[in-house]
Structure formats: C-alpha cells, structure tokens
Amino acid sequence: MIYKITFSCEEGDTNFRRVFKADSESTFLDLHKAILASVQYPDDQMTSFFMCNDRWEKEQEVTLVPMASNFEYDNMVMEDTRLSDLLEEQGQRLIYIFDPMFERYFFGSLKEIIPGAMDGIECVENTGKAPQQLQTEDPNAGIVGKDGKADWETDENFYGDSQYDDGDIDMEGFQDLSFDDGSMF
Image 1 (cartoon, rainbow, N blue to C red):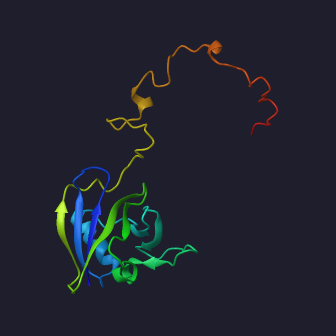
Image 2 (image 1 turned 135 degrees about the vertical axis):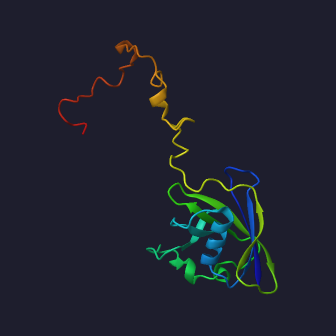
Image 3 (image 1 turned 180 degrees about the horizontal axis):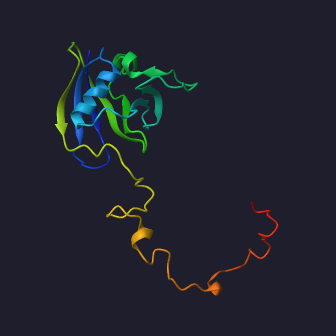
C-alpha cells in the first residue's frame, strides 16, 4: 500500500505543509529522514513520533533510539517499526517532535491509502517555510524582548517605581509571621 501523509505546523508560516507518499513497508526512520530533508533540519536531535487519538492526545511513541518503556505502551524504535505497524486507517493522526527541548512538533495525518507499492518515501508537496528547528528561549516565559534581552535588562521601570514606600504594603495577614525562629524554612 502507498500512504499519503500530510504534515503541518501551527507556528511560523501559515502555509507550511509537507505531503509525503510512502510505501507502507517503509520505516518511521525513513519518514523521519524524509521530513528532515524536506525542511532542511540537521539530524542531531532526539526526535520522536507519537500516534495520537482524535483529540491529538499522545499515545504510542516511536523513538529514534531505544528508551525506557512506559507500562501502557511498548518501546518502539523508528528503525524497527514499519509505517504499516501503526498506521492502519485513513484519518489517523500522528505528531513528529522536531524540537524536543520545547516539545514543538508537526501535526500529521494519514490522508489517503492507495493500492500499490513504491520504493521508499517521496515528498510530493513542499509548501511554505518551516519554522526554526530549535528555540533558545521559552516563548511562553514572556521575558525576552525583540532584541534578545530580558525585559528587566532593558526597562528601568520593569519592577515599577524606584521610590519605595512601606505604607504601600497591606500588612493584614502577615502580622503572625516570624522569620526569627526558622519555622518558615
């Protein structure tokens, strides 16, 4: 069988899309290499695939190298796992984690199952620019400015006025606390 698998991403270029035709007997390692080639990422990260349910919740993982196994799912390795071992029906979902540090990924879907056979995997649609592979700062932290410096490094008023007044603090509820007896730590 020939699988038509589509990948997209929610960040960066909204037109990003990669479509692959793959022989069902190809391995997840073959798909991993085809994805990397299509987005021009180096093969130097501990990437993995996850099979997902209809709500994009992770289920079975397929890792690049053998890892400790979760009791719920077997440890499956890309090199030893054929696409047909896990992809069985049209519409099945999977994700490909390309940035393991910040768990950024491409959303994948088995769009079509075509009778026949082919050699390996071929990228048949390469649309849009892929996002940068690795991030150096957590975008959810919200402390890095456009110049790459933290807000507190560039904004003199980041913590408020430089004038401090003890009267600004509402002490209600703090009167019973004592730092002298070491009970706080």
